Image 1 (tube, rainbow, N blue to C red):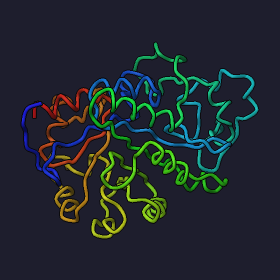
Image 2: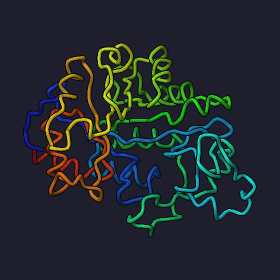
Image 3: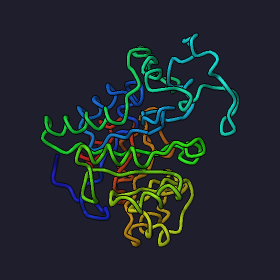
Length: 300
C-alpha cells in the first residue's frame, strides 16, 4: 500500500468491511465467504446475527430462512412454515429451529445474477465459529482481523425471550475482543438496543440509518454512524455535508453498501464510485467485493 493520506476522522486510511463476507463471489454469511474476504485483505468481516430457538447466535441477514438457505428442500421442516407479524407471507424463521437443526441446512445465493454454483455446499456458521476464524486468521496473517457484528431485529427476538446482548459480548470477551481499542464495532438499526449495549460494554457502537440523524444526540450513545451511502452525495454528486457534521460530533462514518454489480449510475465504474466516497472522508466502507474496495483505497 502506498503512503496515502485521507480526510477521515482520525487521518488513518478508511477501513474495508467485508459485507456478509466476500458475498459478491460466495454465498453470504458462510465461513468460506469470510475466509475469502480475509484472504483478499479485508480489515473487518461482518456477520449479521440472529438467534436460534436454543439461544445460539448464528449468521444470517434475516430471521426468515427461505432466501438464503435450502430450508424449502427439507420436508422434515415443512410444518415449520408460518406467517409472522414482521414478515410478508409465510416463511421459516430462525427462532423456530435449534442450532442442531440449523446445521442441517445449507447456504444458497440470495441475490439474483450472482453465481449459484456454490449453493448447497456450506453450512450456517455460529458467531463463535466466525470469531474463532477471525482470531486464528489474525495470528496467521500477522494483522488484526476485525469483527463487525450487527444485531438483527433485536426487538422481534426480545419479544420471544431471546436477546443478542449477553451471548454476543460473552463470545467476544472469550476471544479477547473487549474495550474501545479492540478491532470490533457492534452495529444496529435500533437505538434502544445500542443504548442497552452502551450500558454494558466499551466496545465501539455504530448506529445504522437511512435518514439524516441528530449527530450531537447520537454522540451521547454511539461512536459512529453507518448511513445509506446516498445520504452523503446528492443526485448531482455533490457533498451533502453529512460527513463534516458527523465528524464535528466525533462520529465515524461507515456507509453501505458498495457492490461491483450494482453501480450507482452517477459513476462510470465501481472504483470511481468508491474513490469519490473516500475523497469525502468516510472512515470505512461496506463492500460485497472487498478486494475492489481495497484496490480503490490503495490506488486513491
